[in-house]
Amino acid sequence: MAKYTAPIEEDLRQRILALPRSVKFAHFMKKAITVFVEELEKDSGLKPENFIITVTERKDPSGKK
Image 1 (cartoon, rainbow, N blue to C red):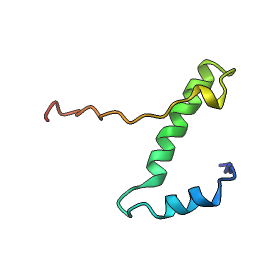
Image 2: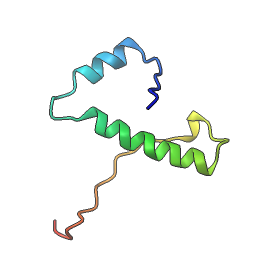
Image 3: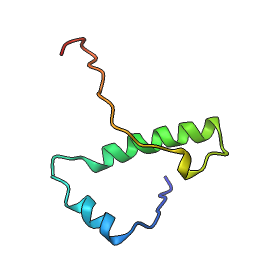
Image 4: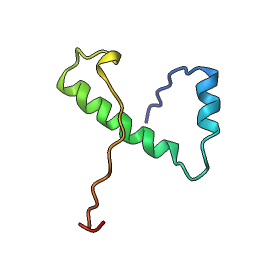
């Protein structure tokens, strides 16, 4: 499988490294990239400024709160 890289600023890298160990950064990135690719497949003319990342409450699959 090919690996894709993109440069990030040093301050962002340091902030990622400073996240609590309980935060699984790779899981968040996998989800974000999946959604990003799906949206680009629908409309390849999108630009970075067209994307807004927000936090939403996860739906409880068990139906319990």
